[in-house]
Length: 227
Image 1 (cartoon, rainbow, N blue to C red):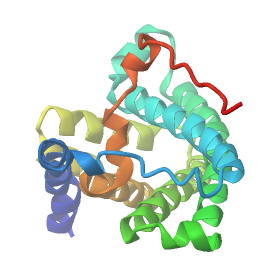
Image 2: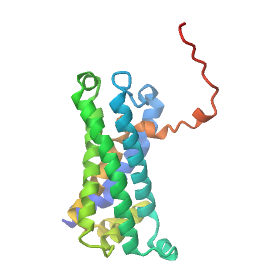
Image 3: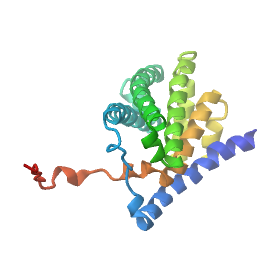
Image 4: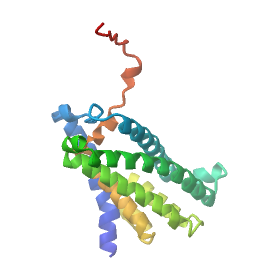
């Protein structure tokens, strides 16, 4: 079991992150025509707008929370007067709030993509797969809140933080050891998160790299009516 744990949480993350970075670079270099969201707005816009706004608000807040929460050393939180227990309660509260918003948006988007025959016909297998993977990851995250409610001492949060920070400093064996005895739902959540990084370059998620900074400084477009 220790070998599998080290493989899944000490080695696999580096494989996934390497594919994430190098795969994105290669796709941008070799296949820029596919570097887009593949929007289906022309086929249906009302449900897309409703689901997309909620999804993006939720997912951006969740990712920011994970980034700050996992990678900020616990000593920094203590200097700021935030104990591990309080940090866990904050994470549960904000994670649950934005998780529900994201869940609402994703439910609409999945129902729209699978239930609308025109959109389904114009969706690739990867479009559907990545949406379902994100949905499963979100559900795991929401379920983990109930697990966290059973132990509010913050110990498992510290182990997850230790895992993430050791992965960043390229200490995979220590990272795997830190996460070895956490609840299975957290392990599955982490593993699926790494899998999302692995498939990222092969999906429409690559548009995340293309932040439209120039949009705010470009010239106005003049659109005239036919009349």
